[in-house]
Image (cartoon, one colour):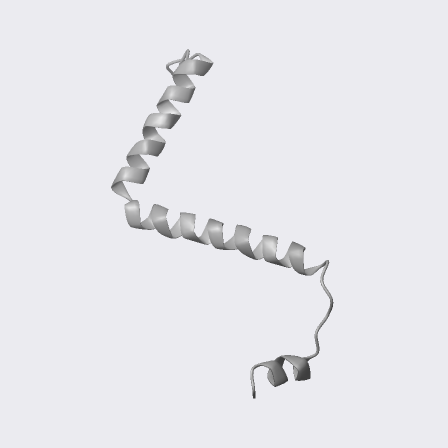
Length: 67
């Protein structure tokens, strides 16, 4: 079996090259993944912000929107 001797910089460069190729070749998949990540981050932030706000009843919401 052949032994590979790669230093850390070479491994980083190979990883960057491979990642760049994946992004370029699979743009739609990567865009969908990025969109999901951003949605998850936004949802987490909204949940955290809502923890410090007053609870509103369902009736108050429907009254506000005229339902």
